[in-house]
Length: 199
Image 1: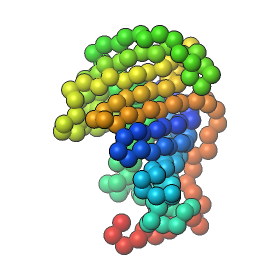
Image 2: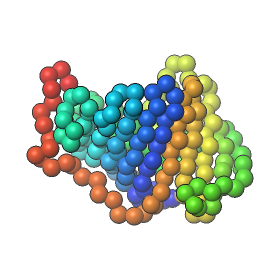
Image 3: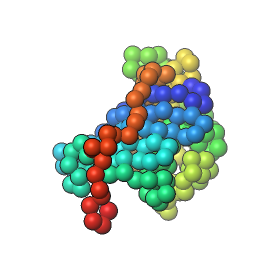
């Protein structure tokens, strides 16, 4: 896993508001770009679609716009930083950066098979504040002092799975299709609409 590349992402969140996300990412020196679709059954059958590029983000939010239509959020909009930050936190190189910044201990837990690939599992204990600051975020009041990540690496030290339980919510992220071509681009202009009042 190098400082730049591409990967496919599958993420599940199990807790009071379970969700499942799927998409592609491209990461490198300029940051991350991502095309992600998230389904949260508790919020209805629609899907939240998000495309985050270096200069703008596009979101399709059920209940605000029709399916397949997007609202553009420019780089100067404060909400762009929130979306770009979320995209950056999903980037595998940023996850490694967080581990290193907050590292307290690493424990090898044995071999496992993920996506049909042989991996080694590690438990990585990290200081919460230092780990989040390395990703450009701040700890939320009430968070534990330390976080323990479960990380599965393949024979090329590429992350295949990462797990984390925090405040009763379990997050699992799987990465695959490393280095394969991805298409991450703004939606067609015909699919970009004006935001509704109050957005």
